Length: 624
Image (cartoon, rainbow, N blue to C red; front, side, top):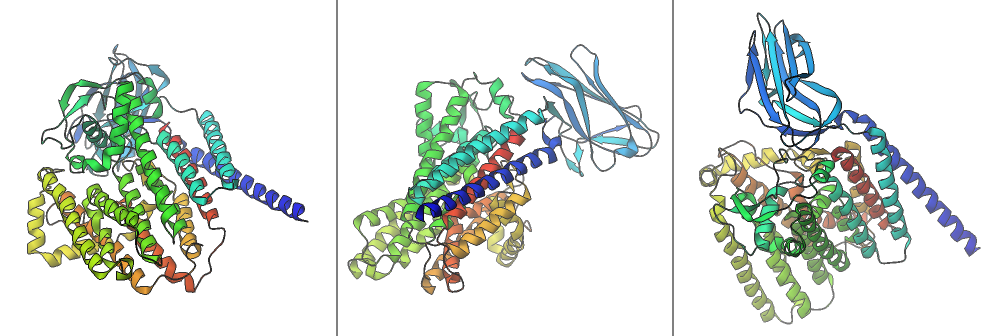
């Protein structure tokens, strides 16, 4: 009877997994076919700083170097009005017209995209030059180039060799099937859930690291500069910093370089002896502590080779390994909300920050480790051990050194009850020690980094003027924060991964909704939350999480917003993820009186891993 039962169970599991794989593969094929028009390799050429208007008899001409690629053509944004025609020509280096297109001005209203494609892609050298020529014939109208929805935009964009959709589809299905098979095998092994999770995390990280091409991660180019600087022993950036030549070659003219673009330059090297000036003050403000694992891998890579791609991917590997180790410690230590933390860690923005050059992955992982150890200490019956005290001190220092706004969870340490210490005197002593250490580490680095804050991030940004506005207009400041916070739906979508990279990589909304449903399910049924936390504990955690979110708004308002602006600029949903577990775990605990724990909660994690790998395949389809 038992053999028959096992057979049936395994058959059901196999059938379920096969159906899930088929659904994922179908979804990938559907997405590729649905977005077939996206699969050109494009890289923006910023030519001209002002909108160009072409009227009757006028001519617009712009030459550009194609680079060492397979050139397919260009597309441009035009906005016309009146009667007449516009003629667009693409002229090769020999003066021959390679492509010509004529359209009525009436068909060019409200920013229309025109595409000029060669019949076949052409192999080009770095010296190959093409020319875009635009002329207009009209008595009462004309056409604007360099305009998109009334805003300044690039006048044209290079298109590289179009992707062969069938081959791409087969490759993506193959990747999905291989990863799915590994996930299934790991899921069926009799090993701890924490170990399964970390394997899932690394698999997702590898897939994302392939799909999110070099420099396509948020601010990744500046993170590379800061990491390489630290790997050379320069822990504090100069006000006019220099970087090695070749880190970001000339062909990175946008935030989006195709995978095959890297393969064409696989032998490029970084010249550490040839330095030039570069501005990266947004990463100079970060403490070197949050970059140490990546800087260590960069240092090791430099001893092996000066190959650019090898060094940059070694930096990514250092980030992935260090964050995986911290997250493994976190999920192994945390006594409640284990599966909530696992699922949040598998969201696309978190995987992105952990598999690219970034300070955000370490920040999130340290926040998780700190939350886990705090709950472990808070809920255990006895007093804290010396090891736990040292761990809390170390993680608190790391939090203050990662990003100053995320030091808010350190306040939780002051709410550890007296019975966790040997005596009341011991508690007071540790509070004094901890407070002193936190002030020194947090504000000590802030004193060093403040000189970079004085450098405007963008035109119109003035930190001193913004602080002055806040002091003299506190009510208006609070109102501006509140207005920005009403955009909660967009922020939640961003947290779940609606857009990645520099908002150039789109995850389908259907996938975002699946993550949302999985998150609701794991909050309601996490089996590690078998009973409610004390109301005061839940209140303190939720209050700390909300205070941390408020600090993010304040920091972005001061550092990235024009003084007195009505809304906070630069806010992205991923900024709230490091403190999200502080909100979800106590909420899940308070919901326990209405729901029962689901024993097989790890199934939610398996499903999230499958969906994240599927998201990775979609990313590859957009960046190949």
